[in-house]
Image (cartoon, rainbow, N blue to C red; front, side, top):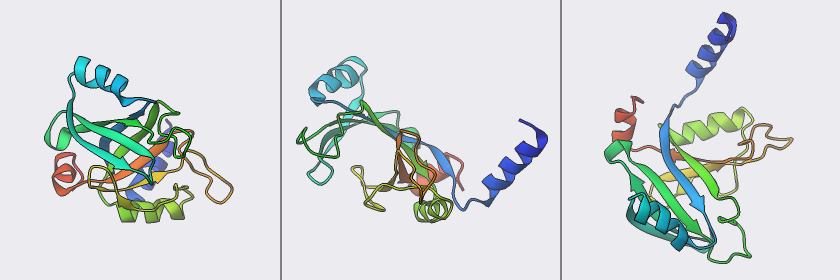
Length: 168
């Protein structure tokens, strides 16, 4: 990267009213989460820490964990309640990636003003109890920045995660 490109990138980063702190979760979908559990829990040894069922989100998911404390990363194993309905959490095996953000409302406000397209639903409570929202995988004419094919979940980091991951 040239010196001027590096300076421009640094200036743009400094102007944002939020920081992305790290990975909060990886969500994996399949037609039957029993097969996912066999690999992720029985073979790889992840701990199941909860379950979330939502008709609105068409999902039955097991919430698993790697690590602990502020460095814990969720691995959500998801199957659809109805494979014929949307959202189709099982169609893309790597369903989405969740990122910790230090100030979710400010991040959404800034990103929206800068052309980022968000999926319907706005900021709301997610399966793990944190406020969340999603960057749409595709851009459109009104919002020219999307996830380039990847659904990205922004997750409000609690204070201990913000502190541990260098956000403040």
